[in-house]
Length: 364
Image (cartoon, rainbow, N blue to C red; front, top):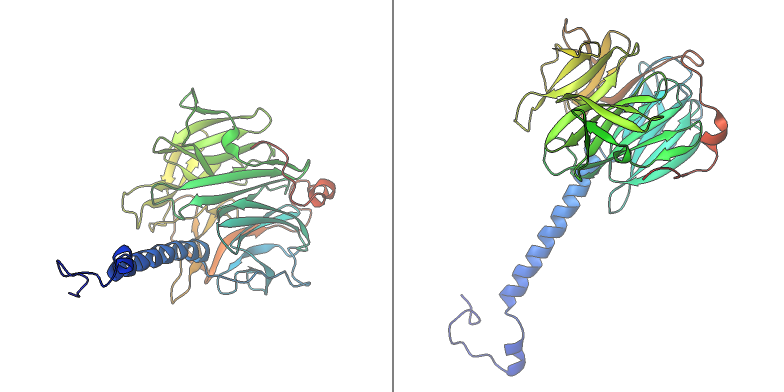
């Protein structure tokens, strides 16, 4: 205990009496540093779960013209091809369909911001849109006409409470951007739903480039929702469905189902038959915090925490519930099966997609 702490210790002069004790200043300084450190630590964690990487453009020779499995390389943060080079742009989430691909990239600085970049097959940058939050989910329709992305506004895991998301949809045929699909009128269990806590994430598009499936969370419950862009409506189909992924034939949805309250392992992968809404678990018993991707009509790919110091690995598992998980690509995430040019649905016209970088017309 110092003289400043002793009862009855007289100050040397009136000026000293007016000044706060030194120990209070020290405590205040430590508290401020702790708060700043916590905020900085959160931002670094939220943006760098897969490793922080400098934004890098694609190599001129790297394109999506060769069919196969493409993914994000965890070591470099760049798009790569299985049994091929690492030469694509740097992304934190990646997806592709038709003649277009989508790259989500965390921008430096605070508050957290995400840049959604649209590319063609040659990774020519067509346009970009910046939204608040941390990159989370990315999807491109099979035709390449529709793109969607989700960013975390608060937090970086669905396993914690208090998170907030923002999910956008961009129609490349018209350049029309829905800034937040929360604006779509929602029906829950057959009743029109109004609530301030509605959050969407994990969009998956149907082949008609109109219907979509997604997760909606409200009132502490998660639902599979079917949306209709033309009718500007959405309705819930089933509870406890997260990060849906529609099969190539449009008949099944792969999703993660909450099976435990353990925040370290809350989910298990399931597949739901849309006809009759029957579900079955997959052979993968580990908790998967990812939006699984259909690599073909019978196989799902997804990311799990990596082994041997890798941040993530891509695994595959049969969609019918048989078999066993297989390590497909060590040190990878964001798997997507890319078809040969012209093999899918009609490609998006280049006119509106390339014009007007950062176009933000639309709802929201």
